[in-house]
Image (cartoon, rainbow, N blue to C red; front, side, top):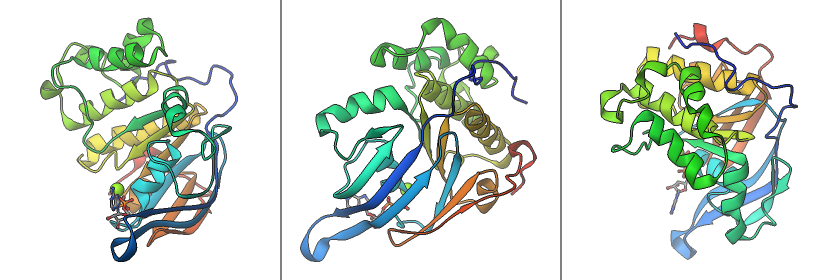
Amino acid sequence: MIEHSKANAPANDRPRGGIRLHGVGKTYGEGEAAVHALTGVDLDIAPGELVAILGASGSGKTTLLNIIGGIEPADTGSIIVAGQDISATKPTALGAFRRDHVGFVFQFFNLIPSLTARENVEVIIELTGRGDRRRVSELLAAVGLADRADHFPAQLSGGQQQRVSIARALATDPDLLLADEPTGALDVATGRSVLELLQRTSRAGRGVVMVTHNEAAAEIADRVIRMRDGRVVSAEINADPVDAATIRW
Ligand SMILES: Nc1ncnc2c1ncn2[C@@H]1O[C@H](COP(=O)(O)OP(=O)(O)O)[C@@H](O)[C@H]1O
Ligand SMILES: [Mg+2]
């Protein structure tokens, strides 16, 4: 059970992390080898929404997430994230956009093995110059790891490691949390605790976009986006999102 804390609480601020895409396209390679990873993607996502992206392997989910997060440039289209037009932002300025607005969570956690849980969070604060070192204990408590702060990744379960990586992503107080298959390497119980955290982050007013293979996980979302062959085939609002604490798959 995750301990509830004010670490990511709303603090009376307005929801953040809206996304508006228009005509976004991305092709890898050239000529006969060209792969159209994204074609004509339009999306309008309100601040604070919890979005799930579903689609077969190769349908363009990761490419879309990376473009939203300013990790990769698109070839065409306009991309406005957290109020910034990143399609007009020079590649050299995208680092500052990511640092100031986005937190990333990956399928295989990407923690630094030689650092403790606490140090994995602190290092991001040092590197970005954002966030507050004094809040690291609070962040680890918020993800249910108060008593694991001085453990190394190898001493933690997969679910615990993923919760460290969420604490790390939240340490800079991002507008938007982007998670690429965050439960893909986890069993049901630990996956559920990760989904609870993502839902709580969204309810605290941050945008959250999660790529998943899992229809049950997508039921916690406010909006479900389905992709096929580089296109968004639907982007339906979920009128009645499931509480992540009750999810089964
Ligand atoms: N760096 C890359 N170079 C060449 N092709 C790529 C690259 N990244 C992704 N692709 C291709 O783009 C398509 C979409 O990939 P991706 O966005 O990773 O899909 P998904 O995350 O849905 O599995 C796939 O056909 C994939 O092989
Ligand atoms: Mg992918």
